[in-house]
Structures are given as structure tokens and as C-alpha cells.
Length: 147
Image (tube, rainbow, N blue to C red; front, side, top):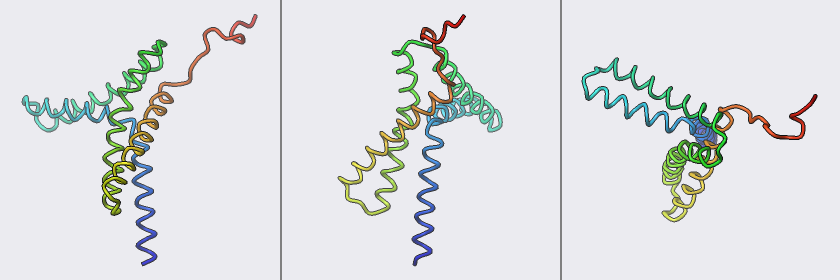
């Protein structure tokens, strides 16, 4: 009995770690699946569809990182961050909702836990896309003009 409870806690911990680690990849994964499915339906075959899907997902991730790192407009950076954080938050909502339902929580508590999970996973994806883009450089600070 103790061993099964311990393994359940370890398994849930691993799933939570996996969810937070992969949250930033929700949008590129969606792009990859959509493009791969489209390519397969248009005659690319399974190998061609997988190759096109991998390429499209990588391009979506790299373009987001480069755009977030190079664009300095706060409004555009907010939009790019939201573009990556919203699908991650949706995935976090459904993951926590499923775990809460499995744990036997009532419907109201399931939705509360899922909403909190969505916010946390979305915020995690936001921070990760910002950190993957690289450090911010100072352009007009006092220390930037040394002689």
C-alpha cells in the first residue's frame, strides 16, 4: 500500500515536471501537427509528412525566439509571448483537470484547480520563451556609455 502511494506521488511529480518542461512547445507542436496533417492529406506520404511537420515545428519555435529577442516593442512582445503562453495554458488547464478528475475532486474544485494550473503553466511558458530568446541588453542605461 505504501509503495503504491509513493509511486503515485512520484508519477504525478514526473508528469507535472514534464508539463512545465514542455509547456513552451505547445504552439510549435500544434503547428507541426497541423502542417504535417495537411501535407499527409495532400499526398506527401507518412515520411514526407513527418519531415514537413518537424521542419514546421522547428521554424515556429525558432521564429518565435528570434522575434521575441529582436523586437523591442512591448506590444508586439506581449503578443508573441501570449501566442506561446495561451496554448500552453490551455494544455495546462486540461492536464490539471484530468488529474483532478482522476483524484476524485468535485466538479467545482476540478475547475478551480484547472484554472490555477492554466495560469501557472501559461506563466511558465511565458518565462521560458523569454529566457530562450536570450538576455535583454541595455540600450540607454547610465553604464552603457563608458569611455
